Length: 581
View 1 (cartoon, rainbow, N blue to C red):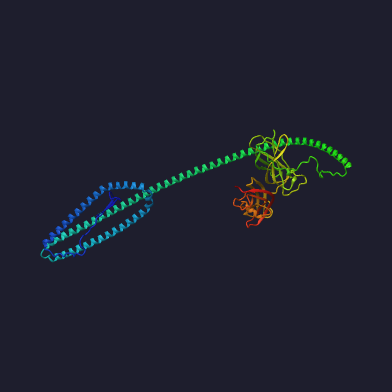
View 2 (view 1 turned 90 degrees about the vertical axis):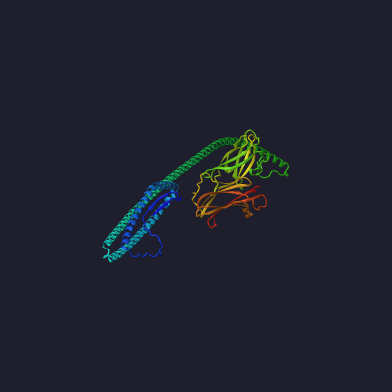
């Protein structure tokens, strides 16, 4: 028999396994034929014919086996070559799948081989038992023949001896054939075991090769991924370094520009202070001369009045008590100029000293008038309900050119009188920008900016930022109304136990519900010091009495996590806001 292992398309033989088996064919229900005793001559001829037939069958079987083996040996190299080519091709196409399934395939192959070996062992044992049974049957037949021969011994001693010799030869020939079959079977089994072992070793070697190739490929892929990641990280670090360098360069440029502006402003301030001092000395001289003239005029007028009173005692004076000729109206009574084209486009605080004794206010303007050769801009800082607050601040006007748009810086110093006492600082609400005519020194009020500023006398020691009263501390750092529609509030805080909230409310004291007209959302803050900026505007959906909204109170509250007010600040100032169209 021969077992062939073909490829999937059944076009090539991958391997073959030949083996010898003794098979008897026929009907399992057929009864054995009972041979009648034959005459002596027929028994001898029959035994001789059986021996010759057995010898011929064995020779033919051996020849067929040799031919089959030769054909198999000739076909095996081609089949193995085709199998290797096909296996290599499939290995390249299915390397990964074969590597994963190879272990299971080897285990299954080993199991099948073991089962096959057990089955073949069982078959060989059955064949041996069957051969033993056949030998036993032959021995029994021989014994029967010997018995028959013994019965006929007296008549045919020579024939019996010959039959005995033939039977012995048949037995020896059968024993030799059985031994040769067993030897061939043993050799075939050894060859099969060797072939299986070689196939297993080859499969293991192939699996190891594929696993090693897979490992190398994975290692290479990991190395390439790590290299790409390192390149990407290096690029990110370089980009961050570049951005940081650009940011530092920009900050340095801004710092240099600000320092230049400060130096320029300081130079202008010093020059202006010198000019103002000279102008003030000249004005004081003129003022003293004018006072002398007025005193003489007043004395003359009083003398004339006394003379008239002496002649007309019933005539009453028409001058109000305390009034003097030539008196000037206070600053607060001056109205804004409405006949000028010059516009103030922005007013803001660009710098504050650490002790809040000095600030620099920037004014952006659009000059469109012709007021002489040296027009000047100036600012006044005032406080509501304190007409004398203007005298607390020192600021010099600055000359402007005829450019259509420009920017001026005004350094302002807080110089209160010696009797001034304020532990919490001095708050102002208005910054008034005015224009001076160069030749006549006439003044025109241009723009009143609503700005809440807190000032402190020079040399004031500020409390540490970490110091708090109770659960926290808040400070109004800046407030500005940019235009009738928008503004902002800057608040410094220090919350002891966080988190909490900062809340800003703008309303009229006689209508607290007017705080809902403004779109100012509370902001959540963490524990510790910080700063928050609140944008202020009239909410478009607010149900206001009209498009114009008037308020007079600004309130800032610091709340803890439970919603309890820890600290609050209230400022009174009249403001007018409008809904954005």
